[in-house]
View 1 (cartoon, chains in turn cyan, yellow):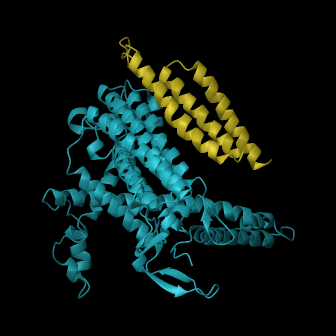
View 2 (tube, chains in turn red, yellow):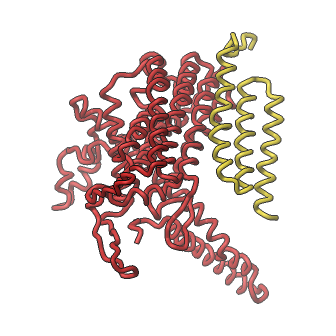
View 3 (tube, chains in turn blue, red):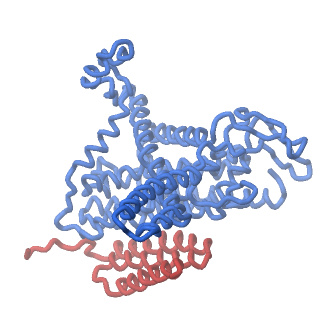
Amino acid sequence: MTGALIDLFGWSYALASFLLWIGAQLLGLGNWISLQLGAPSPGPLEGMIGFVTGAPLTSLVAIILAINILLLWATAFHLLIVMWIERKMYSRLQDRRGIMLGLGSSEILRNTLGRIPLIGRPFRKASHLGTGFLQTVADGVKLFQKEVITPASADKWMFHAAPVMIAASTLFLFIAIPWSDGFWIMGSRLPNGDVVNPWGVLVILGAFSVAPLSILIAGWASNNKYTLLGGMRAAAQLMSYEIPMVLSIIALVVFAGTLDPFQLVRQQSAPLTFGLGPFGTVQIPWLPNWYIFNPILWIAFVVFFITVIAEAERIPFDIPEAEAELVEGWTTEYSGMRFGIVFGFKWLRAIAGAALIAILFLGGWSGPVFAQVWIPNIASPGNLWPIPILPQEFWFTLKIYAIFVVFVWIGWSVPRVRIDQILNIGWKRLLPLSLLAILLATLARGMGWF
Amino acid sequence: MDLEVVAFLILSGLEVGAAVMTVTAKKLVHNVFWLAVTLITIAGIYLLFLAEFVAWIQIIVYAGAVPVLFLFGIMLTRRKIMEEPHESQ
């Protein structure tokens, strides 16, 4: 009764058993041939077949498959979609259509599929079918083909280590972020069916906090004034915005009493309930219990939203790469797929930040209350079970994209803030606000309000 | 051999090696990088002790914040920030 579409470990275990079964069949064929050639009775490969089909190897392959499936889902799939959303969205904000070249524009398609009667009708004329989605794929292919240039005076070892560190810390984020009750890597399933991961939010914060070091090293190792300045700015900004980010999460954690993303989402999937201390509780059944609706925690939400934009180096806070003054900042000297990594993984950090916002404040993968069918629970009469109409992954992805659209909207509407303004916003506005949120959350928890 | 022992040997070997490199590396930024490697492997050893909370706090505080502060100190105080290009070569 979880409503999750994908049971990642179940699927990957089935896939691993299937792959290993094929291997065992091949080994069995070899065994049969060697038996025909006169080998002694059990055959030379019998022990190997037992090892290949055994439980330990199957679980190991299943775990590796699960990690790969989740990382490919997060990086390859969502990265392309989010890049496309950004390009289309800011083009509309600038009153143009943006990238439009797609499958329908290609002559090959017109000459092959278009020739087929009836079915080929939409391909017969040049059209904007796909509205430019393949442009992001083409850009990726272009980056793969380009030469990787190492500057002559760069610190070569560090120069190539920095993208690895950035990629590793960003992918580690996606290991810790669950996508639904069934689509997760880090966690464990209790006997009653609930999934727990007691330090999940802490792991995500830890993975976020490794980025400044690798960016600073990347900027230094390129041995270029612009990259060094960009790296310094990036590290200063990321370091100073991490403090209000963590403090606003502490306000939420003090209020919610858990660092477990699954537990946070379970708490938020109930109808909205306010405790009014001695006056009882008020329930609003048509709103979910998201922490953004909480009279105190929306302060933490505002702080957290701004700091996530800064952590992802998105446009109001993009002085680290300010293309007009610093020529893309700390990424200047990278080329080819090295540039693809340092550039694309910024989008991935934005996706991870949006996912974190969704989990902490917007109910994660729980759908809105009106999108659920309530059926009576047979096991315990009088209780109602919520059955979501759409799977949890749908709601979570929808929330991530919606938050990302707001990122793009803010990014292409406001001008870039200067370095002194960034420090003022960070230290004089966000830090006191997050401390206020902690204070109010502690008070509310202590008095039993909200 | 037990998998945990293997993991401990790998992590501790990395840690000791990185600690030696922290002391012996010639450039200060390399020293800080190896210091970060040392601290992250210590977090891995905490994970082997099943002390998850300490491990993640170790990564947040020591791997995330302390080396960056060192780097800032180095870069803001030295007069010659970058190495001069080798003119003899």
